Amino acid sequence: MIKLYNSLTRKKEEFKPIKPGAVSMYTCGPTVYWYAHVGNLRTYIFEDVLKRVLEYAGYKAKHVMNITDVGHLTSDENTGEDKMEKGAARENKSVWEIAKMYTDAFKKDLGTLNIEEPDVWVKATDTIKEQIDLIKKLEEKGFTYVIEDGVYFDTAKLENYGRLWPNKLDIKTRARVEVVAGKKNDPDFALWKLTPAGVKRQMEWDSPWGKGFPGWHTECVVMSCDNLGIPFDIHCGGIDHILIHHTNEIAQAEAVYGGPMCNYWLHGEYLNLKGEKIAKSSGNIVLVDDLVKKGINPLAYRYLCFTTHYRIPLSFSWESIEAADSALKSLYDKVRMLKTAVKEIPAEYSEQALDYKAQFTAAIEDDLNMPKALAVLWQAAKDQNFVQAEKLALLLDFDRVLGFKLNSVKAEAIPAGILELARQREQARRNKDWAKSDELRGQAGAAGYLIEDTPTGSKIKKI
Image 1: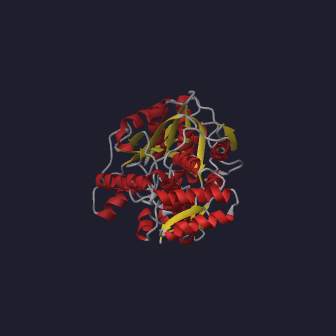
Image 2: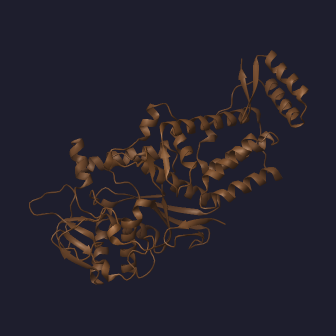
């Protein structure tokens, strides 16, 4: 039974899909005006684990992610400088070139971190007509008004606006609320931004209200509901989306369709560097390429993310990522040793293996408790009384969720006779026959191989 923390109800709930055996899932994608940093990518790793857990449990997932290549200004309130135009000026390229360049970079980062791509990619610029149609429906229902800079959603017309917010939240306490001349209410937001007179934008379209571009919050309603239906099962994003972006998605969807947009809202917490949130606006960022340049396996960042629950802020430091890299190397060494020793994966699990699998499953299905899942992984890996073939099978099975690419770890070319000595020694150690264990280790040493005992089990090395 999978339980997930639902930001909408502010409690952990049993996951019950709309269609038995299937999951419809939307995750907010990047605004492609610059590189994604590790803070952004923590959210995508959490969403990747969610999808893997659902598939591990037997669900067929349909995962949709958007690419925001237009309509997102420097403020979540759709005010300020256009991020795409800003990126184009910085790189001396067109906004279309910028969008392509940073979309490709984002997809490369996903591959580097072994994050599964969505089943459906949708670009905002491919859904302009649908977004205009949605705004027209809102207009027909009396939820909009027009001021000098665009078409706005009148939040006072929606009785339960802001129900995603934490309890007793006052609109005046929200970050990034900016004053726009003519707005009726502080939280009202832009549905369509009009191009100012005398200004020529690279991305703009004709509409019933004038030439301009859609608001950021509108595009996600269209791209999610058009591809998944309404309601759909799960909507994910970073915790910073709760107060504005996701709140405004809900408002539009409920105003148009008269019912819930989706059933479960999940949000990942911030990544902090030197005590401050990692953010592009402050320049306080680390990129995936920065890890590579320092000789760190990028998958060590996955490992680091799993050491803290996704709903708890995670502190990033070079010391912590190096420790994660060391731990991942130890896991690879263990798997390499097991692959070297094991010739055949068992078709069935023993009771001992099934118990470990049950513990792992209980952890991941308890709101993605990855720190506990990692603890189970290492308990199984270090268990000296656990048959090697089953241990390997279990670690590879767990990796369907963890995504450390354990299948890609290659066995060492160690002679069969040495492997047999190591197997006999492991059996002797389980039997607490220390004299026999030492004798077998000595035989291996005489043949030029060291059987080394480590916290994660035995390793064989050429002397």
